[in-house]
Length: 179
Image (cartoon, rainbow, N blue to C red; front, top):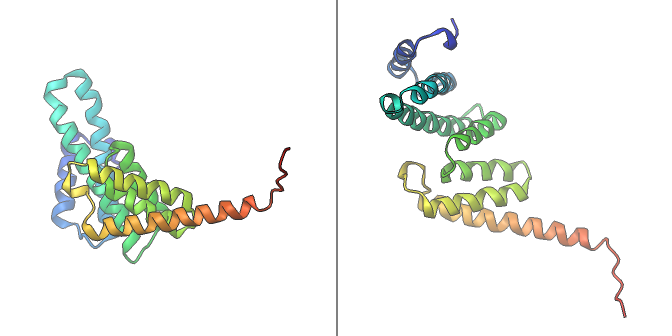
């Protein structure tokens, strides 16, 4: 039976079951929870549009859980044995599609871009991580002191790499001074 066939109450029961029986060191645990929260979120949107007051809190709470688990899932994929960078990248960017001010998501995306050699994207992501860290009000998504240091260091290194490669590319142009 697919998640689309379940009622909201059945989705809530499945969520509870996953929390009770799920193993947080298991790749499938986060993937299943993310899928459940995404389906719950989709179901709540039309209910909020119909009766704003009654379901608005549930929608906000579900969105917070969805974003939180997308971040955890992306981090898990980046850090643990599976090391699936493509899915980690997708999970983190999906979290940002729901909520923009998540410094830790930008930070992790910065490292993934850096690892892939996409230094201009790494510059963008590390800069966003630092910008949102200053503005953010949710401590669960903020950067710790070590992460702030690394964000600054990798931002500078990425920017230097971009500047160096740009300078090298410019050497191929011939310049003539107009008099």
